[in-house]
Amino acid sequence: MSTAEEPPESTGSTESTEGTEHHTIAPRRVSFDWESTPLHWIPDEPTATHVIDVLHLLLPAGERWFVKVFKEGLPLVRDPALLRDVKAFMGQEATHSVQHAHVLEHLAAQKLDTADYTKYVDFLFERLLGERPPLGMPIPAREWLRHRLAVIAAIEQFTAVLGDWVLHADALDRAGSDAIMLDLLRWHGAEEVEHRSVAFDMYQHCGGAGLPRYARRVAGMAVTAPVMLYLWGWGAAYLIRHDPQLDGRLRYSLAEHNRAVRKGLLPAWRDLGAAIPRYLRRSYHPSQEGSLRRAVEYLAASPAARAAAGAIGRSAIA
Image (cartoon, rainbow, N blue to C red):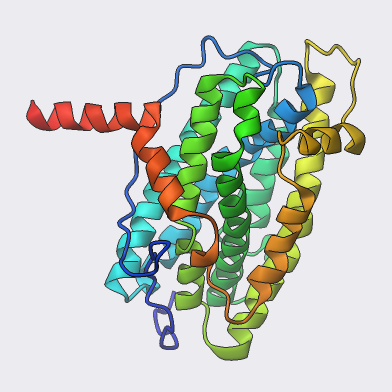
């Protein structure tokens, strides 16, 4: 692949909420013990539980794909600060993929097998969005890479919004949600806010210049938003339908979903929808999303992140 690119307009820096200094991104090698986590980890809320559980269906394959695509794009990155952020992003996403895969194993151990859904997610990321265009489509390699980088940037817009939501979702605590699952979701959400700008900066750096670059960004969101909505609805319906504890007594419905939204157990549709026009502004940058301060504070307090930091410290001393 040629590395001859138009001069990038983005430095790739990830700013603090005050916009004054660069925040250093770092992977955290966390682990979680799922032995005591119940299937309905939000007590008496199977719909809210399984709507959030769709993350575990999508992210193992999706975040492995992020890493593969970014690895393809690494030779094109000429900004040292962006290169450091991209490599840290890849490390974080690889860890996210592994940890959510462990949750799928936990679901399987509780007789909720997800393979009949995740095989289609694997097909999406490995075949339809793989290294080569599907069906032999005559798309130049550089353009295919740019398209996939634009899709990742669009997905990361939603993950930043969801990450900030879960960091502020006190209703999950009041509902008695499982502490281990909450730590996973908030550790992951905090890292999504922490690296919220990296995929966008990577696309801006590698995606050309001017109106064509912006048009690809719009196209990336036009593809991503409806596909994510479809996959999420399908995934929630699948989990509820196959939940052995429900035994077919419940089906996914918008009425139950919206009831959980009103209780603060799921993000509001308007907040998710509003993320799209923000992203489509020509002047937009993801550093406007969420609270980096809140994310960093949670990462300093997260039981899993603290345990990982302690293990690193003990290893260094040894």
